[in-house]
Length: 177
Image: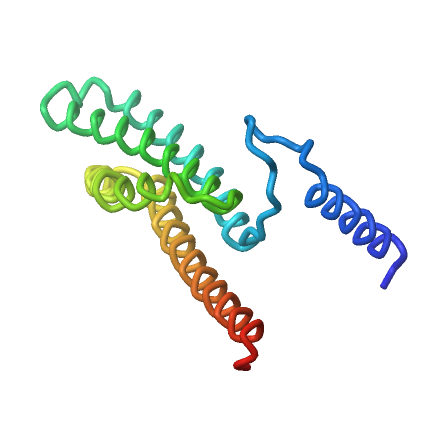
């Protein structure tokens, strides 16, 4: 290995040892405990954050352009669905980051209730509302759905792998393996 990578890993191991041995590291009053996070999920969340920001600004621009036509119940429903989708997506991304980077999953209920009950219906409605109006919004909504599905799949596979690893460790410690 190149010396730069070796130095990096040596420094990382020193910092990890410092964090685990010291109780002076705190995050909002709680001791900082190292957590093995899912790197693939973290990269998907970063990509989804960028796509979500791009989608929300593009959709808002679409609503402004067509605002003269949308002064009816359909336009108000689209505006309400847009506000729900943007707010729910930001909360879902926060919950996903929180679950991936911390040891306790206190925001898991947010992720499990908001995504299927609020976010997906709002996104489907908004996607169907502009089905033939904009190819760009159609493409962004496809990207958003694919990223949400990949995030769920990545989190599920990582969780199963962690359970198997913990089970193997417990069997080794009991002398059964």
